[in-house]
Length: 62
Ligand code: SF4
Image 1 (tube, rainbow, N blue to C red):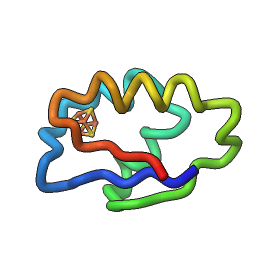
Image 2: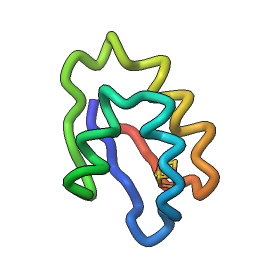
Image 3: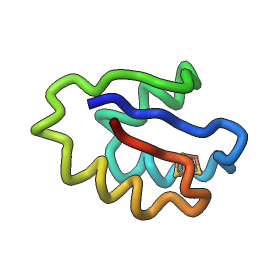
């Protein structure tokens, strides 16, 4: 599972980090535009929630 963040759309609210810190905390530290999720099966539901809840619709998953 690969996550892409639209950095221009992101407003930095950190909702995604609060929803699934195991996946998004590292992103928050490095601010990469795209990254792979280790153990995707484990975090699938929380990542989906983060995508749905992002107020800027800045997260996409491939
Ligand atoms: S929830 Fe969306 S807008 Fe908020 S920090 Fe995460 S990617 Fe950015």
